[in-house]
Length: 386
Ligand code: PMP
Ligand code: GLN
Image 1 (cartoon, rainbow, N blue to C red):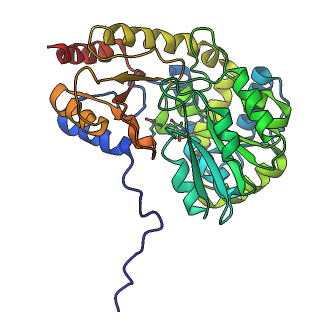
Image 2 (cartoon, rainbow, N blue to C red):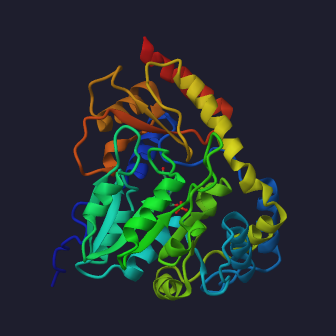
Image 3 (cartoon, rainbow, N blue to C red):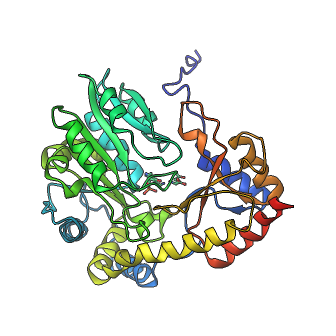
């Protein structure tokens, strides 16, 4: 007997745009400014510490919730940055990247029939996780062209079935960064609900022009209902290590860990141990990250200014949006393909993160690159003006 043909649990999901565009960039020999990853190395000292732990026998399973010294170091970071005391043993869980943390938080709280509010454009992993949990995504568009939140619309989307709100600042793909007013508004609209918050803060250390990252961890009433996700991949230029974490109150972390223990169980031991040492030894690294990436943003924007692409400098993340309507009438999906094949620079079309139709002609570039890479991309993009 042959197996029954599979009926997809995610019929509307294909292969992620990041895989699609990176593959195309590689096939075409294009400069890959699509998928977000640095083309430079993690700090040498961090690599040495990880290698040292590998050589000194830290190669078996780590504790399920995380390497204790790393959980302590994360709790210390949360205390230093947000003035919040969190328990290293009960409120911090180390995960396989931010991606796993997002998935586990969603599976931990979303039940069949629950509604989950997403602000779109929304990072692509949120909705499939909601669907696998049997929930429904309720998508509220961000405002154009600033990508700021229309809090009246969010408030209007909340119903008795709203179980979770997923928020993301600094925001991928737009680079928009929340202010304190946004945190106030979130606090206000949730005050009379029992909804949880999943706050995707993986770009917490990439905020520019003197802005401060507005974390839900800075507010008691929000921290009490939130899963806060971060990613060492972003912070340490090591996206391939896939190490992140989730901070949540003990009762939420307990449910989170029930999922995590069967999705991942534990995260690569020597990497956790190396990061733990590095966090204590070199806290300046994440404190210096805003200036480091602001320089890269400024450099990339100077190059973009020499092309017919239009842009507002990004407020955060390592992404820069660019409007190509002066260059082409193609859709953003077609333009990103054309740009990769014909101009030799790969970008991400922004419409793939939304379900609401939009006529915006905007693509996203990643500027987490060496100067020479940005310069080479700039030279190619200047051809658009000819
Ligand atoms: N959330 C957002 C908004 C992201 O851009 C990313 C980056 N890929 C992630 C989560 C996942 O992070 P990680 O690579 O650590 O899994
Ligand atoms: N978050 C990265 C981006 O936005 C990609 C992550 C991935 O490829 N899964 O480009």
